[in-house]
Every structure is written in structure tokens, then in C-alpha cells.
Length: 247
Image 1 (cartoon, rainbow, N blue to C red):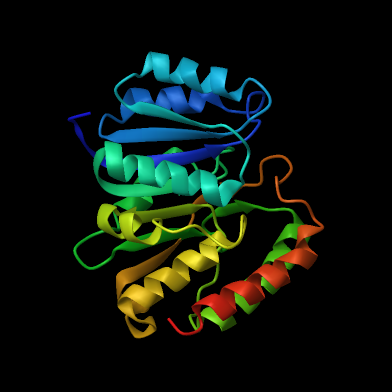
Image 2: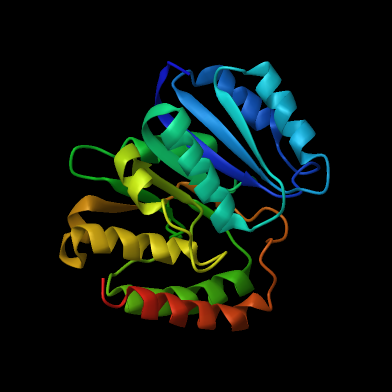
């Protein structure tokens, strides 16, 4: 593909056939000519791949569909999509968001405009303020705050929300931090922060990263992460901390 896109958005998908909001994707692609969407079917057992190929058929020049043989989890799916884009697509920036569009495609594009000659990484944050709309189940919010506090302590960075599923990178940075496999299927976002810190140094993170409160975030349906993972994630977090402590 010879076209240069301003932004490529990776969308990991697993059994999304019934809940994928195809109309939102179609409306977005009708209006955004310099953005590519790369869907990654993570070994779905339903008709997800068929739905994704229908969208690609309608927008052959601005949609890519990558299909994994078996389900390997969100971390692997995002990594597959990002590496596909860095190798096959010409773009300035690469993002990933969740297939349920809890963060909209339009807001992802808006946040991507924060990337410039100094900011190499921008990410959405589910900070509830008087002038935005964050619809999040109370138990997820409470669990999320406990996890976020522990993560911020490990990173030694005042990050409010490492786990929000909207992150944007320069093409060169994405190429670097996604080249290796992740330790955790679900806490890979934490590893991303560690990897960026290893490249630039923790002291530089406030000047090269930007956390942006979302205007709108809607808790759509049930999470693919089972509630019991709350207990296992601490082991993952310990492994991550041990692996990156010398970086």
C-alpha cells in the first residue's frame, strides 16, 4: 500500500461478531480518509472474521484484516496488529483501542493530534470530571483504582490510568516497543510504560508522554477479563516489576 496515512488504529477482536458496531466503523471510514483501521481477529470462534471482511470489502484501501489461527489474548493481538502496520503500512502514528469502542474512533484521532516533535506517546485516561462523561461500573472503578495505585508506584510515575484502552505512538516508537512478546495478556499496558521508560529514562517521561482525560468513555457490556483475574494479576504485576526493575 503506497498511501501515507496519518494514523493507523489497531482493533483487537475476539468473538465480536454480534456486538461489533459496524455502523460506527463505516461512518468513521466514510469521513476519515487519512486513517487506516487494522482489525486483528484473535482466533474468534464466531463470525467475527466474516463481519470484519465485510467492512474491508467496503473500504479496501483503508481497512486491513489480520487473522490469527488461535486465540492468544489481547497483548498478542495488539502486537500482531502493530507489527503488521509498521511492516506493511506507511503511517506517521499508530494507535490501538478496544473493539467495543468504549473510546470512540473520533476521540482516538483527536488524541493522536497531541503527538508532535516532543510528545511520542499519548494516551486516554478515564478521569471523571465535571465536563466529561465517564460511564463505568462502580466495582470496576474501585478495583481499577487499587490496581492503578499499585502500578503507578511500580512505575515511579504519577499515571492515573495506565489501563485505558486508547494509546497512540509515533511509528518509530511503536516499532521499538512492540518487537518483543509481553509477559502478561492483560497487563501489557504496564509493560509498555516500562519499555518507554527504558528507552528515554523515567526522568524524561513527563516531557515525552501525555495523559489526556477522555471526553467520553462508556462501559460497554461485560469485560473479556474475568473478575477472578483480579487475584492473578498481582502475580503478573510482580513478574513485570522483576523483569523491568533494572531498565
